[in-house]
Length: 153
Image (cartoon, rainbow, N blue to C red; front, side, top):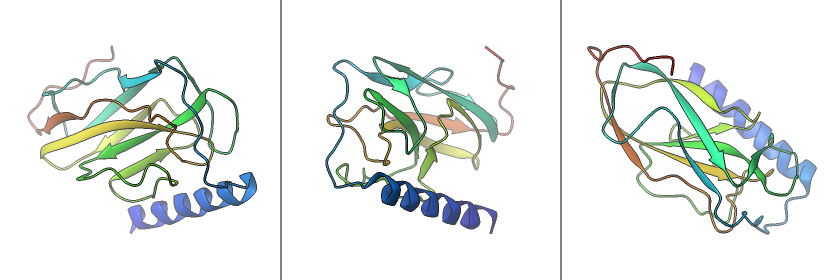
């Protein structure tokens, strides 16, 4: 139930941001060469079920959702997402798309054991991916309760 109420709160916040911003469907341009990536994870890493993931960005800045500032956005983490959503629309809130609309650059994740895919996607003040989209490569991690703890670096 905790996830469902969190999803509901995020959905309400997204709707409030869209209403307040007057979102009209135009995509915000991204800065040429902008990139996002995982700072502490690589493809093939093995992690414990509860771990921290850190995000990096270059060529653009971070601003909270609702803050319409050129060349900025906020992170969205795509987890086990089979297909990308419509990138011309605000990103939905669900168990596969986590929003970091306060400008967070890291998150504590709790995932079940097994293989998972992760991808970062930057979006503008209205949760709409930039044009062209600024996204990381998809990485695959393995969650294993016997994995060594993460280092702080």
